[in-house]
Each structure stands twice: as structure tokens, then as C-alpha cells.
Length: 206
Image 1 (cartoon, rainbow, N blue to C red):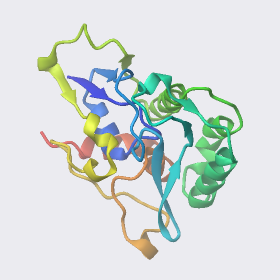
Image 2 (image 1 turned 60 degrees about the horizontal axis):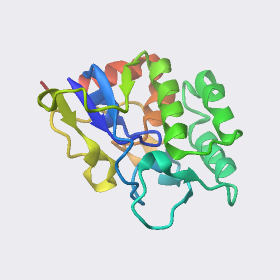
Image 3 (image 1 turned 180 degrees about the horizontal axis):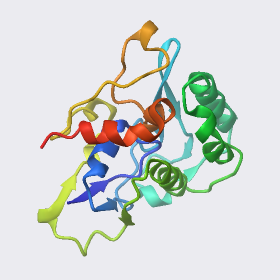
Image 4 (image 1 turned 45 degrees about the vertical axis):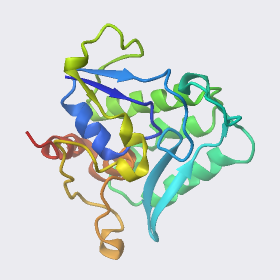
């Protein structure tokens, strides 16, 4: 199976469960950018519940391909995002093991959103042992063998994935907030470390 998706910012756990059983990730780089989606937003768990982290972009409101969307450097979003991540996960079991792999992303400057998202994605997959072939050329693949989950970019549709059942795992603030499903993949990674892959595997319904 080949998986078709938008390039997402620290995609939610259900995305990676689907990737677990895929052979190739097809990136819909030519699809238009849409605001208020996981293209430039991710959701983490904090002491007070969930928190959205949104990357500001340069967008004139017209139809612009995802691959052409630039990150805006106005404000101090990188500092804010990393501080939020540290605050949320510094007490998680595996934060100290993985923090350095991500910290530099919030110190550098990436011109394009898609490049930033895919670089983060590659690090996540490497740390979890979930590396797959990636292509932006979808023409060479048979539509009959493609699972299209582009709709997962819409926050309201994140649970609408066939063959997926959320599995509970340890979360830092679960005693206070209860288990929160479908968060950013870094929630699973920082809390479960190498066992993240097992959670993804067990989330798949045949």
C-alpha cells in the first residue's frame, strides 16, 4: 500500500499508524495550502490540556501550492514553539533522549513550510525506525494501491480514518486531564520512546 498525504507539521499519531503499514509515502506537494490545518499546525498536551502550535506563513489568500508556501519570520514563533514543547514534555520519560534532535529546528531558518515539515518528519521516522520511501511524483503509482488520507490535515477529520483505533499510552498529564488521543506524534515519541512503534502497530485494525 502507498499512502497519499499532505506534508504536515508534526503530524498526529493516526497519520503515523497509517504510515506504519505503507510502503511509500506520496506527498501531495502541488495541492493548495489551506489555513487552520495540520499543514502548519500541531497539537500537544500540556498541564492545562491541549495547545495548538501554529507556524506563521506568507500567504496572500490565493491558491498557492503547498510546496511554494514560505514560513514567515515575523514574531518569535520558533522560540514560543520550542518553549511550549519543553514545558509540556520535559518530564516525559524520553524527552532528554530526543530533545537535541529537534531543538536545532527552532534555531535555524527554513524558507519553505514543506521543507521544514518534511525534515521534521524524516527525523521522527528515523528515531522510531519507521523510515519509508518518499516521493512527490504521484503519477507513477497506481490509484488502486493508494490510500488517500489527505483529509487528515483537517483537525475535525483526524479520527475519520478507516482501519485505525486509538490506543492509550502513558501521557505526562493523564492523571490531571485523562488520556488525550490523536495528538502530535511527538507526544507519543517523548512519552513512549522505542515503544512508540508498538503503539502504532496496535492501532491498526485489519
